[in-house]
View 1 (cartoon, one colour):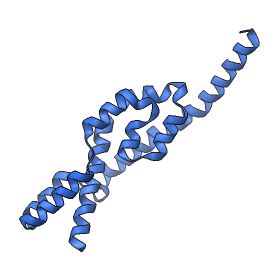
View 2 (cartoon, rainbow, N blue to C red; view 1 turned 180 degrees about the horizontal axis):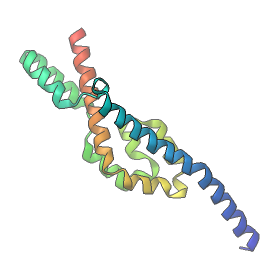
View 3 (tube, rainbow, N blue to C red; view 1 turned 90 degrees about the vertical axis):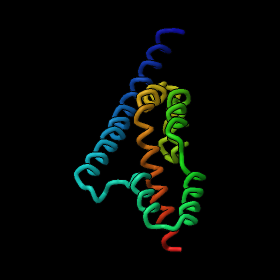
View 4 (spheres, one colour; view 1 turned 135 degrees about the vertical axis):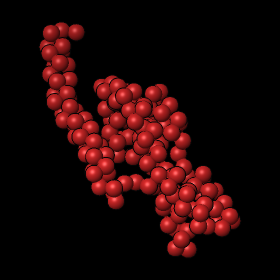
Length: 150
């Protein structure tokens, strides 16, 4: 490998870093602003599974509760599974694919050769559990709404 090859590799990695750093910052700032908006405006908060289940258990008959619970368990995601995927396969975006965020998973997959997604996967291994809980809360709310309308 001569000096020109080393220089070209350095330039291409530098250009990639110039493109990736702002993208990563946009993702981080966007996720923080969503959390801040949810705290400031309680009406935009995502319902948790506990809130939905307390409503279902108080207001519905046992047979409807069982139907709700079966539909929820069939589609709900496990936070521990998402965390394990983030630690071991975070570099290819498997944890985001599991949660249903296909766009972010594809982005991780495209840039996996830079090892930046692997580092992000390790960093996100704790926060991904909250993402799964939000996903499950939205799912429970959706199922409950469908059952009320039916």
